[in-house]
Image (cartoon, rainbow over all chains, first blue to last red; front, side, top):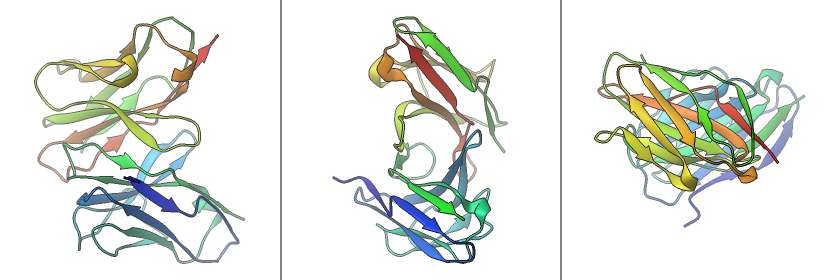
Length: 113
Length: 114
């Protein structure tokens, strides 16, 4: 099992450019999540998908969109990147939200200049 | 809504010494509690979790945590740390009956010195 995979690992964007971060899991999990991690801020939830076909906003959704493509894949799109979106982005999945632990991908380090 | 406070942003300790990383939470309902570890340039991985039952929970790598409902705490402990325990540690809480989305603390950086 590969677990949770994310692509790309690193990305540099100019302000105003767009990009999509890809995430896939092979554990047949129902719930998937996107977080951003900034120094001293811990993990902040951007969007989540409790089950295939549903998506909901988290704590910091502005400037992002998501797509739950199928049960395995959950992508995060930045339509017009801003320097404030420079961060490390983590995708995670869990069997179900709540009692089950989350499994995290290795992260995407994004820099917006 | 639930919240999590990790009281120390950084904890320096010498190798083979004991360590405690503190976590307090607030919630008006029952909670599920987790500790995750993040090694440099990696994603988070689960150390241990408390769902119900015994308040002392044992996890991987010799870590354990104790759930204290009256003090709303879930402190992480290890009796003797190794250099390899140097990492960022996150406490997370999920409240039952709600959206079941976890809230993470801001993390504690454990630095083990030789």
